Image (cartoon, rainbow, N blue to C red; front, side, top):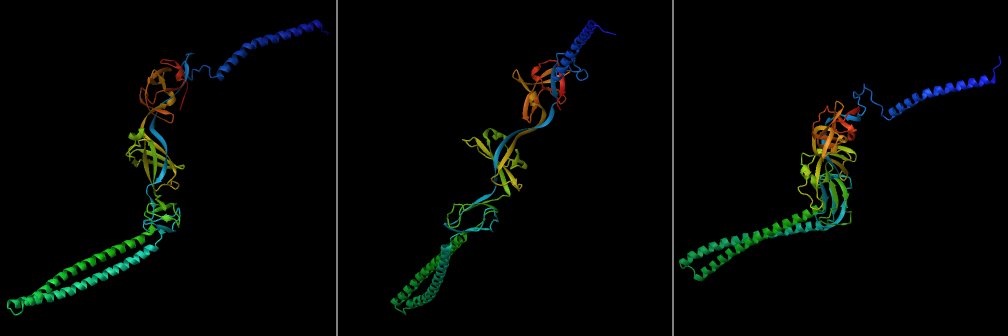
Length: 414
């Protein structure tokens, strides 16, 4: 069978028309599906009734959360230092060249036992020998004075007997008056000699006491040439070396008792009323070591008039290894602590001069004026306001709603 060219052209036209009709019919379906897909991708697709009962097409989408009961703390974070509670700057007691130092930095020392250093003692040893010699001389002088007074008292006794006998004889006119007067004079002279002898004995005794005191001082000076540790601890610094001149008040060594330290810091004067020694708590970290929660042990009785700061300290007994004097301390001062109901801080707005939040009831927003308290870790304490733990508080979308706005709850924060 032969097909004419005219018939073939008509067939092709019919097929082309059919394709055009099919494409025209599919265009609305493609456009509609793409529009719905675009709205879905941009979160604009109307919520399904099984997710949100609100069917109002004008409902504002929001995100809500429920308040929580939390432990709120008002804190102040400062940097401080670790200091030794007990330390000693050890200097010579007498002037002199430092001859020897017996300890090294970092060495443990014991109070009253460990010898630290020694100053030149040659002259001091000579002074002790001189003092002993002077004491011997004074003791001999005292013995001589005692012997003299004993001889004088013996002569006085004989003179008294002679005086009394001549007194009786002169009354009987058995001796001349001149002989009596000679005996009387001798008796009176020996009485005076006894008094002089007693004074010499007293002087010799005083000189002996003086010599003893001088010897004691010389011996103490000699003992002071060798210095022993006044407290137990560790040698933290050597400030002089052998051969250098030492003087009272010029430290040679520093000793720190590392078993009892303090974390110290300075706070602004505005916080002075908030700090109570023995009550205010500190959370302390030193060189990454968590020392724990401790109470303030010391609060400066005064505020520095120029710096407007005051000092606080916290006692740390037997601190962990690594918490040493001189280390930097990170102190978190707990100024106030209490339990209360809180909401996310981002939920709170300022409207008409008030702090407000929006609470959702039956998909309608209600503005609640609140009195806020402590803010901590993204949550703010609610001191006053009609809010409970069951309230649905708006945390996203709150800037797009007013009192009585219909909302669509997209999700709830957990």
